[in-house]
Length: 451
Image (tube, rainbow, N blue to C red):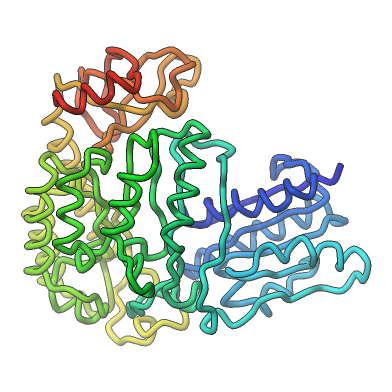
């Protein structure tokens, strides 16, 4: 049997797509092996969000070539899309496919085996207008299922290369989303995470559909679905219609990831973000009313070109005022080919590092404050995997609906199920919990009515 090994760099969308690509290979009777093993075919799904992403991608490609010089080496993903010629120049690379038409990879492999000529299968992504269907009926190592609902982005923020790697916005037809959601629930998944490159923009390219309508469809039409999580949504996409659905639904969880990037209007303008801090605050206030106890996580970039100490402190005070449950803090990383890379007043690394540390300290404090509200409370948690710090302890870790990471003792057979857990000691990044009971469908519905 022919073997294939995968390595994925970058975001959750890439991880979803690797699982989808694996389905194509599975249909052709390939056997999947670990990337560190000798394999007949290696597939590297690359990232290009930063220059470092490109570098790591090249390192992994070379590692696969060294592992088995006779293997067929296939490179796909965002770096493959933006720089196919650069990748083709690496000796040993046989096939390059971008972020579209991944199914063709199988055909290219057969052609390469016959002709022994490298194949560049990358097309102009900016001309693509349809969503590429890539179903994942089951995830190799996940207890929460991801469901990709859209592709591409129309924003063109000055720091971001992604529109050039992923193309313009394309949404998946709502009936296909609902059908795959039902397939995932039927496979045993209790939670579905809606994901995409610009998830909250779902439906902007469709005639009579938007994110609110899709959420309503998933809520009403998918039998047995317990939790819906939106992987990310821009403040500008939290419409009153979306807020109404959040308010009415008992399946959409109390957690939203709402990128901030900067808390200073002048920096936001240089970034070409489509909101002001007043607008961001006003949306958050409305959504908090719809979902009491809402956990809000976010992304922040520090050291963007021209960021003064005053602008940084505006971001710092904005974060203090909002009160996030967790922040992902990044130093600005120059990305070749973006407007921000050509801006004057690039910030030195020492200043970036200092600002990152100050924000991480604030984030840790806010995360602990948010978690402390739930000490002594009983939350619904999906145990996902053995406790990473001590896999032989009998402890499992998983996420509550409001995205608290909880560690607790529970029977192994309950992994992937919804259980009730009492938070005995709040903290960050882990909260300690005590298993109360498993949730049957009936008790889950009763608990939702009680809490």
